[in-house]
Length: 383
Ligand SMILES: CCCCCCCC(=O)SCCNC(=O)CCNC(=O)[C@H](O)C(C)(C)COP(=O)(O)OP(=O)(O)OC[C@H]1O[C@@H](n2cnc3c(N)ncnc32)[C@H](O)[C@@H]1OP(=O)(O)O
Image (cartoon, rainbow, N blue to C red; front, top):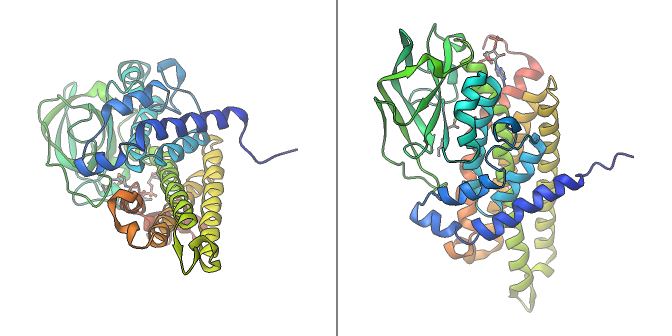
């Protein structure tokens, strides 16, 4: 009989990540947020447990697990710190892209140190003038013998300035998606520099900055797959990245709900625990129900992506949109249930709300997720 439940291995993986989050992330998350500290040492500890290359092949040091395992891990890690779980999700996406599209030589050159996080990875698609319309990117790579000369700016890059490896989408040909290629650009390449660390509402435990290319000479040997494949590489990486971010929202929201359950069970008003007021009970019930619904959709999308199902991209977009909207709404409701205390940093709920807000914007806005779903439902029309 199909139990529609996790198997013993999946439960063990989730419990391992939950324990890691409780021991290594949750006790420090508020301090990292306040001090804008990027805890690379802690991420390397996560990497030692196989969480930096969850769905990367084992022959290069990856864990060789599936997307559902990844969803379990990112949700669990986000119960301790959504911003660090989300960074690990980006790093995992980068490792997978090199694993999936790299040559045997490139896989051996880049992946073993990415899997241990001796080297940190970043994903560079967005530019100052192109976010949702990713295929309009302008960063240009012009062939010069066995190198490309790269010029342009990538915007909103997580890990910029700290990361060692920048998987970068560049224009090598015509306008539009068909003229895009993917280069693996190393930090110490002459002509690569970084903007100032952006001041953000949340996600303060990881740096965000521009990456600037000025006549950067990048070996042709660092191009993933053929010229013109870059947009597909970028999009297929994001299918999984979107699931990961959705899982991060679920973990942050679950932690906020757990805090709200503890607070409402302890806080008294009008002579009884506020958890005994039915109006609040119904809100808690809805929060738990909506999280469970989002989790179920996300797991279904994860299985579809692993199975290379024809509707996997659509399901990933549905799951990202639903999990990140639900996660933010649940965390915001948890803040409300804490009354004035929810607004104080020490209670940890406002930090979750700030971290989860950006998940509705990045790795494809939730408007773009609706566009992907709608195109599948009604076709593209005239663009
Ligand atoms: C703190 C910081 C805050 C901000 C942080 C921001 C940083 C980030 O989030 S990084 C990434 C975010 N960016 C995005 O997610 C981009 C969003 N946009 C998109 O996803 C796309 O541009 C989208 C969906 C709008 C479609 O674009 P469009 O130009 O219409 O391309 P489209 O015609 O659909 O596809 C072009 C080709 O790619 C292929 N393709 C599209 N999607 C996929 C996919 N998922 N997998 C494989 N191939 C794909 C298509 O099949 C097509 O190929 P062909 O021409 O052979 O048929």
